[in-house]
Every structure is written in structure tokens, then in C-alpha cells.
Length: 204
Image (cartoon, rainbow, N blue to C red; front, side, top):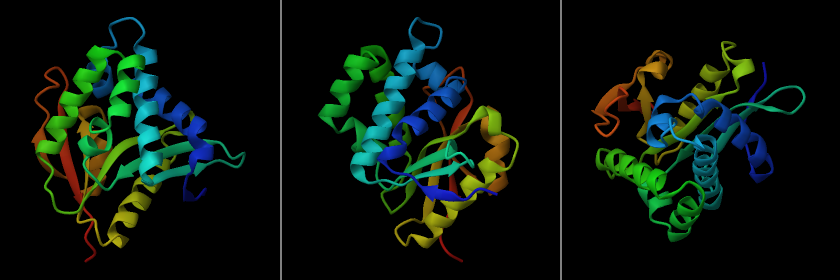
């Protein structure tokens, strides 16, 4: 079975491609970025691209699985700080989002971030911001393998007491395997059942 490894900026294009392909069908991103309107693909790519750029700039871990040809088949990103401070607090991030994703998508995304941050405590934690398995490699155990590695990374990180993430009903069955604790429903997404959940990552 392929191993999970930490990725670098040299994998940026591959990671971006996998994430954009996966989040094209994600109910939360489709709602936030108005999939029913023209140029949804452009807004989606711009949003994910700027999130990845911030992850790399902050030195946050990006985990990935590669196949025998070296192609990325699954990836996940976590941050050790508030998502709000990581992205929305950056004037450069705001500027790039406004010029690529547009004012409407940028505003919606910032409001979404505000809701997440409002319910995450100040004590040390990690936040799973992006997670995807390439469509042609799903249902092969790669998602579980990747998530297990991320959780183990957090357990070994003394600064992480919990791993937070946002899940919709489409992905809830997958995350239920990791015994999540519900924190709060995301009210902004009134036509999508989404909730902030946390996984315990303190060493036993």
C-alpha cells in the first residue's frame, strides 16, 4: 500500500488539481461559491489555490498519497492556527480572492470562516481545512489511511488537543469512523446540513 508523506511546494499543481476536482461536487463549497452561477469553476479554483498558497506560506502540513507513477491520489491540509487569522487576516489573501473569486464569493467565504472560528476554543488545536481522494482512487481505503496519518500526526504533536473539521451529510459516514464529537451546526449554510466536529487527538 502506498505511504502517506508530507508534500511540498513542488506538488502544488497536483494537489490543486485533486482538490479542485473533488470540491467541484462538495455541497459546502457549491453553496458558498454559488455553483448555480456562471464561472463557478474559476471561483472554486481561485479559492482553493489561495488556501493552498497560505498553507505553504505558513509552513502548515500538507499530507498526500502518491501512486507508483508519483501522481497524487489523496491529500489533506491542516493548520495549527485560526483559519481566520491564516487567510482573512491577510490583506494579500483578500486582494487575490477579490480579483480572482470575486467580491460575492469572498464575502461568503469570510462569513463562513467567522462561524467556524467562533466555536473553536483558543487552546491548541489543529483544523482540517481541505481533504480529498482522487475520484479514480476512491473506495480503496486511501481516505482512511490518510485520515489515520493526520490524526496520528496530531497525537504526536503536543500542541494539538483536538482536530476540528467541517463535515456535511455527504461525508458524515466517512468521518463517523473516527468517533467525532459535534460542536456546532453551521447556520449560514441553510440549504446544506453541515456541522463543525472535532476528533480527540490527545495521547492516551
